[in-house]
Image 1: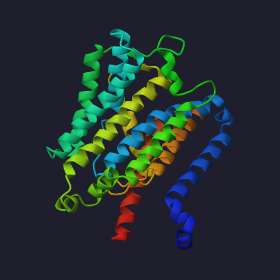
Image 2: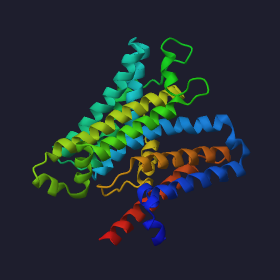
Image 3: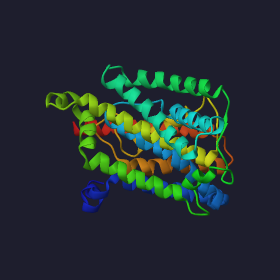
Image 4: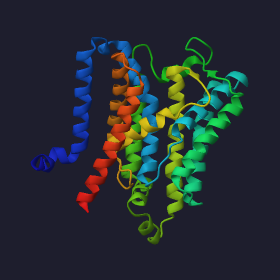
Length: 323
């Protein structure tokens, strides 16, 4: 194992990412052998639909966790974005393009709100995200009068937004997701924003003493997360059309699991966008595999919880060894 870690190619790619890709391949082969229907086009597209919105949620929360924070409101906020934008579209007649912008703006507002409370008021991230979760659910229910919202089908007026996910048999959403992931990786690893965000997670006090406005950059991480949550809402409705108030909690743990499994440390200071992408594919594949085997989705919740515990444990173990 030590010789493998010293291999130049392994060092460049990262042993964790190589292992994750191996797990992804093994899972795919195992599910395909156990259930031949798993290889069908409909199953593959169903898994990709799950990847899109969950992927954007995971990318967003990666920035937050990199600062040493956490956000458990991303799922309900995604539903809130979809409901407010969708209700504005169906009940107030706003154009589709504006509805998509509204979704992103609502997500951004929640991100700024969370970031401001954490950075400027020093409210613990856990408390802020729990409060935002309830606010998002309540706001969406009040705005839509507790009604579910159905976005237009492809054949209806304004249905062009569904081309964001698929054009014919081409999974356009996959290319958009990978493109956004590349942009996120550049921001996190190649820009001043990313350097400060990672430094906040490593040693916030040292960064503050060096003269950096830590509050601004911490709030920026949450704002980026909010924008990506708003985008996730667009891809959710592009794939599933109908949204109901009061839901979204179930996607918090899955998004965080994909992020942490990919190598982002819950303690902050260490994050991997490419690892997050692979982690999301594993979660989506697990979800689709369980359905293909005819098992209850509750099994996925159990396995996801175990994955989170295992990922955090190995992260803590790795940090202890380094120390």
